[in-house]
Amino acid sequence: MIWLTGDKHGQITPFSENSKYKKIKKNDTLIVCGDFGFLWNKSKQETKNLKWLTKRKYTIAFVDGSNDNYDIISEYPIEDWNGGKIRRISKNIIYLMRGELYDIENTKVLSFGGSVNDNNSNEETYCLENAYPTKQQIDNVINNIKKVNGEIDLIITHEAPNSIKSCLCNNKDEHNTFTNILEEIRVHSNFKKWFFGKYHIDKIIPPKYYAVFEDLIKLEK
Image 1 (cartoon, rainbow, N blue to C red):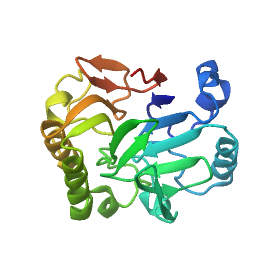
Image 2 (cartoon, one colour; image 1 turned 90 degrees about the horizontal axis):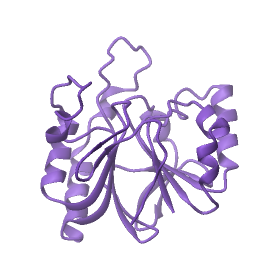
Image 3 (cartoon, helix red, strand yellow; image 1 turned 30 degrees about the horizontal axis):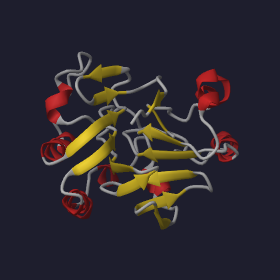
Image 4 (cartoon, one colour; image 1 turned 45 degrees about the vertical axis):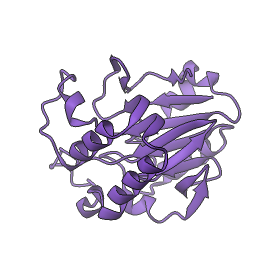
């Protein structure tokens, strides 16, 4: 079973005290739509939290957001997983790389995480040259969409595509590199559902877009 949730910002409380997470069973997959936040500064508390998460019996998969340290994430090894490339953080924690296509429980999942951090006053914002998508990542997502003739079950991002941002009443951001790319993905894909986490709200935008934050959503086929 696939479950989806939004930004966690390195907070262990939702996992340890929220009874909803007890529904996630052994061998299930929990996907976090950016700002996972448990790979930020290698502090003692962060290391302790990662060890605790590693003891979960389900897989935790995440895309990067605007408050993830890509420099730290990039230290972990790349390996093949369910048809795509990941970075293996621990035995059950994985980073879904940008533009990769996975087969997770017979579900075609396309990932394209990342975002430009709007909070320029945050001195700990991770290195901006790593925030922007590379040509290789863009080419990769284009090739993977072509491989399946655009037929994708699930798209996981942190940002929302341009045409959907206007439906988020709390959002005043202008279009950026990520939202432009995501709009191209939207136009050229025949997908069933799209989940994104940046906007810190839980909102369904019919017919198939989901802004997710605190909700824990069970993917129904």
